Image: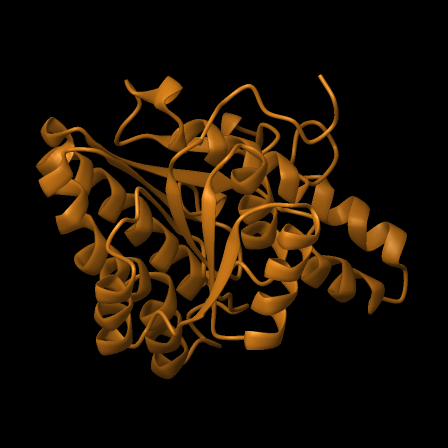
Length: 257
């Protein structure tokens, strides 16, 4: 199979992807568009979001940019009025924080909670009711390995990503009988442009990469495209029996020590 292709079709589906201006979100937008979806790229960083749309349109894909701060409930509700036909919702926008209990302030937790938890809640609250009325749709929430096992010195991040997994399972329990599905993806470390930039700042970048990759049993970090492939599967009709799941893309991290 050619690199970047997918056996799953998203033709005639409309997809909204948050945080799609870069990294995993951009990879998901590109993968969804290749699979035939019309893609709305949502991001608070307008230049980055518009750059993603430009890349997609250059490849002949259907894409539009919508500015969005996922923490702004009113803005999210207004967007739902603007985009009534969303079939696929990917809650990808998220932020991180390094710190344990002693070095994490309450304001740090509040900031992460607003984006990582309240953000997906806001989007689901705004867009899922229409899916329920149509009795079809797929919601994919980006959680993390930190939503399944604890990652050292990531207290606030772990808390919020555990909450994303809980949100996903609760939505599935309450609403999957309608035909709408809710799943989460839990990546390990992913080699995004942001992560690459941070690694380059270390005195020995190659050693820093090896240290970060060591938690994955296969000895490397995931690529954004590998996470995107999982999102395409969960969005497609081929995964009709999958709901309430937490799909691990972690290179075996959660398997044990």
